[in-house]
Amino acid sequence: MEWISVKEALPAPGKMVMVFRPQVLEADRTDLPVRESYYCGRTGRFACHHQPTMWLEIKEPPGFTEAMRQRQYRG
Image 1: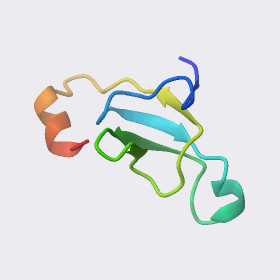
Image 2: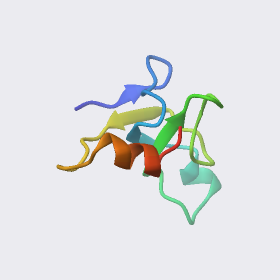
Image 3: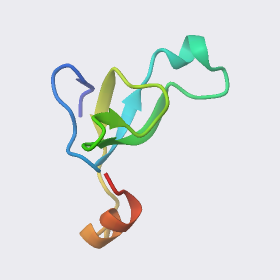
């Protein structure tokens, strides 16, 4: 798996991914620059305060179903 620039592509709405937010290093000492988040297609933003520059697809755990995804992430 490789990091993908948000300028090149965006994940499917509602899909959980790892994001890299370099501005956190300067702006917020209580947050981490790498975290999980999802892209919200309706707003055109990721579900985190500092918007990422890169994202990485993560695999869902075994047994994770579409119903679980819809209940957990409403993107």
